[in-house]
Length: 460
Image 1 (cartoon, rainbow, N blue to C red):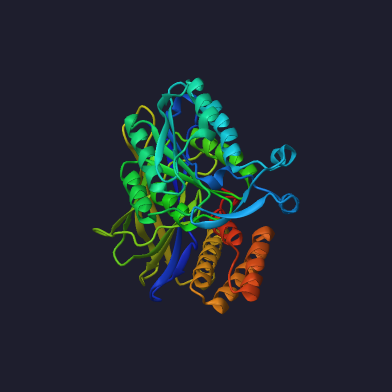
Image 2: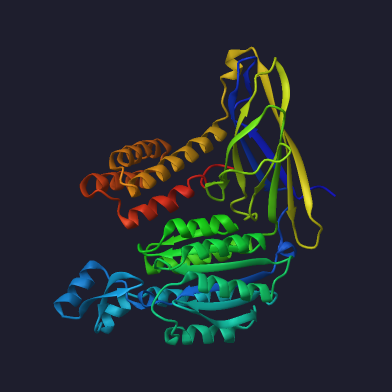
């Protein structure tokens, strides 16, 4: 039986100079299906939806004009919610409320869309959390639309405290997923919040536990007052997706994007084993699809590293970019690494497909100077992503000149790539740093989330 997945291994250059010392070589490793993905390959979904129900989620999100109108009416006061000052409203006229929904109202709309995407073989649950967590619907059959309607109808009245303790919600969500856990299912949480959480270390520990149990956590940060670094780390650690909903109206499309991505998965638990040839060193590794994610220091044992490649979303099949240092060798063709991809699919034992990474050493300088444009495009976008990540870290640490310089360098390079919108965001935050000594909360999130997707539009 032929393999259902194929490995494509592309070095950034067809050759390196012979006998010239250590050389840096980039290796792009892509995965793609070799067979059409049909309904008979769909995986059942075991989903827990974990909703922040703190007070800030219920407050209408107003435009500046609507806010000013309420101030003139004497309906605005400042209170503390989720540990931060927020505006509270004594009374909002119906015509303004209809034009300014709260985050929670848009979550309820998104839940309707979730219901329309569920099949009878799926399982779902809903958890609300703030200071504590409450299971609103425990492990239900996918066809139980009445239970979902009851959750939507009663969500406004749920009382779970005044603070935001995401660990409570994630812990309860994992408990519900484990009730219906199956190795042949997609076991997943969707967690959404609009605030900073208590006990972030507990949240990270739960994400690690989920990853060890093959449970993915997708996160959705809403507005501008949440910890984007934490939400992205949760998603990356567990193999989920991370979304930024700037406004309430962005919540239903983000939910739909997640449900569509999950519905397209037929191959899951992909893992790439890379066996390095003698003398070859792995300097760095990034996932570059479905998003850019730094894999950090990977353990090396017997010259082999194992790279988690997430699940395969049909519209965004996974790919990794490896930075390798290769030793000097005489002219000739050499194997620099052996690669083996293992994966799971419905109704079959774990499968694998292998490939070899070959590199030519040459005395022909012109041949060695050639570059693969596609691979170098990935390299450049990863480089810009790292540049902006360092800029945000330096801004947070108070090194304003260094952060400003890096943001402007990133803006220039983004423009050269044709990414005008992202370039504009980087330039705006460089200006904010110069004028105010800090980046804006919304701007930092826009940069964080947008640059992770820089590789999604590259030709496959």
